[in-house]
Image 1 (cartoon, rainbow over the protein chains, first blue to last red):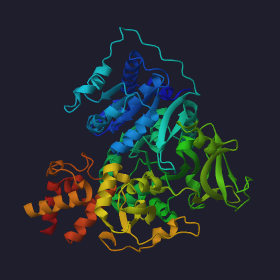
Image 2 (cartoon, rainbow over the protein chains, first blue to last red):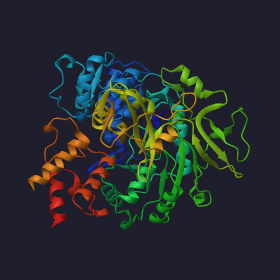
Image 3 (tube, each protein chain N blue to C red):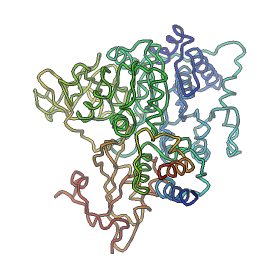
Image 4 (tube, chains in turn purple, brown):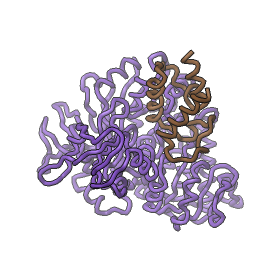
Length: 525
Length: 82
């Protein structure tokens, strides 16, 4: 089975049922399938070869999902782009994946206009709507086409045949922050995604009557799995991916009678502390899912109080595993606080100690995973792939313990990745950017605990002798070169950074210390 | 009211728009639709309102009608301070 078959099957069973509800707009399964097929026909007519990379750069659910299935139907590989981006990040991703076509929302064309001269491989940019952006450079007019034109592609009555695509072929590349700084493209086969989708459907007991409130972006693996699992069962999605005003989301949950809600810990912290959730009732809500980072047991208990009678699923996974690796059943939530549960159906998890042997009860070991859902590797990075995909399975880098009943508990993560809100941020990427400033001698970026976001990003900076620089200058430089969510929340100046005897920066100590030069500006005379 | 709007604009530029052109923010520009503020940023706005104007914002008041533009913020502040 291919990923796009999930939509074809649901549309055959529930053609008139709403699959996407976005504000006042409702789209049926038949609408979605028709749009996906039309776009796929245009891709085929335009002679995109099997295995082409098609990028999606939009925050509109219907545009995104129809483009997602269209690319796969035409034999291509989907690359969902983060819409919270910077020109620099976007260019790096598009060059890395070698996308030849981009389906873009109109408001995101401003990024592409500037980058087109550096993107030789782009054959077409399909812009949502029916009119050309006024500022589109004339030199690239031939590459630009409106979505309306694409949907009206004339194939002279005959459907063009798709290339032969099999389960082992790649369906999607999801970019995830890599420990070395540059984001890495996780290659997922059709078979990986389909296996994971069916496993999640099974343990969440999803059914056609389910209706999810979707606040998570589709370009990350968590949101991607929410989308595919609900389409797999013929369910519905109420989509509002702006979590700026949680009360608006709560109103929609009540109005649309949603049965499920998925979030990361910061989503739930915002709901509990910055919304009127206590005053709402959700008679139709059946389940909540939490993943993306460890959630404090105290927060879980508060959720239980605010959503009485609602099943809470704590889940663990990685993009490299399509999404999910383990879950804690709701009935075990109070009995096993802090646990990530056990492997999902079809997955085997084991803990390997530093000697490569299976860890005993209570012993700490690295989580290693085997299953049909494990990625094919990292796009264009065979060395990284070989380090992560080993004969024993996927090395997750996460350290855990197992109790006597074989429930897993994460102890620590091997990488120093910062988890802020729904984002994973590689400190090295930020350090490299900040280091580009001439006055910066040394910089270390660390995560510090925050009740709402999980972690705040703190940049600890040492300036060169005889130079000065303000926090604002550093922040502005980061804003110019990084997506907004990667810009440090705090910048602090230090005379020196604490180091080990071998010269390695002691980041754990930095996260706590406040040895800054002064509150506003940094000078190093 | 105009002084209040000036103060709001200064805060938004200082914290979210930085060196952007003044035309990047009209008084009726939606922070949400234009992607000026994200879910972290709105918490900064709320903290700033509470500290600068010595007011307490209730959970129910965290809605676009009160917070999602310079105009909306100015009207909200004026109402709260009455």
